[in-house]
Length: 252
Image (cartoon, rainbow, N blue to C red; front, side, top):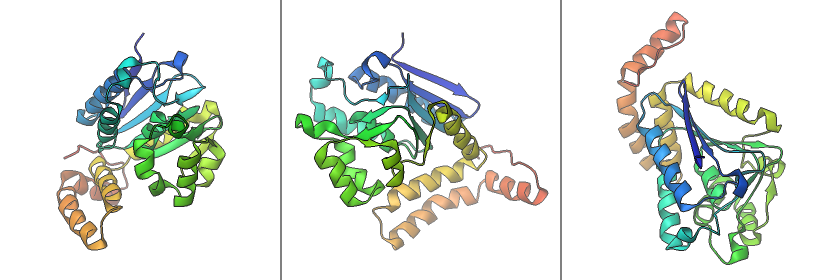
């Protein structure tokens, strides 16, 4: 049985962590397969949105697999590379969080652009309870929630519920377990209705703009938006709007 499932339907790529017997914990081998799937997703011109989830209703990903002996080798280097690869994806990613979302799983969800949570989901970084350090949550969590909330999550290592995650703005929606994937697919479908080139530039501007001045951001906008605005897809989008018909995107 594959520890990672990778499927493509229409314009959507589905990535499913498939180690339910160990709460979908992240082993080195699973991280390699995840990276391979994301590279394929990024390079496939027919795939416009990715949905990441975990098998079963107990866990999205409960963190690193502490029984994975390979994972104990140079963990700082491994985690840094894991974060770098996850956050380099330029296409939209949706996390469908169906249970425990902890440590490395929390990193995976934070690396996604949109997070949908089951009512059973919970989030956190218990690394500190083991005297380890969560790389991406430590670096970026305060970009997603108020700094004091981020510090409480990081310092205490305690989990927060899906409802609390929604209250502080960490997730977009909280839904019943049966509605998790349909909700993620509905949002993915809405994204696919828009110009894929424009969506990807919006993502890059939003991510890089967090650490830029307005002037720097405007320079980046001019550099990135020029190609989009001069594209065939922009002409098609305007024509479709004026003709009151759905656009046919070609990513050109």
